[in-house]
Image (cartoon, rainbow, N blue to C red; front, top):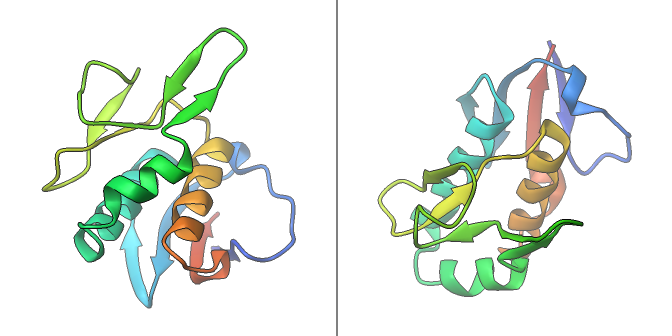
Length: 126
């Protein structure tokens, strides 16, 4: 198993790796997919910053650009995103129709908008 700290300047194609867990703020969270990591990280951020969540997801842009159309990263309706998963104990859903690289990018955006450094997120891969 290898630990990758997101803030490191390595180019990694996460699509060809096997995710085992992620670490954030000293807490190790076992996961097996990048989608699980994204949803878990969103849940952790929501639990710690529920009052700021609306503003932060708006800053992230709620919208991501696509050649064919604009789609939402986050929504309060499970009907809007393509593959929505509810962020635990919240009114929010997060889009999960991403490849591994894009899921990691969204995790990085989320951390930056909440004032954390990317290097605080560790990804355990094999």
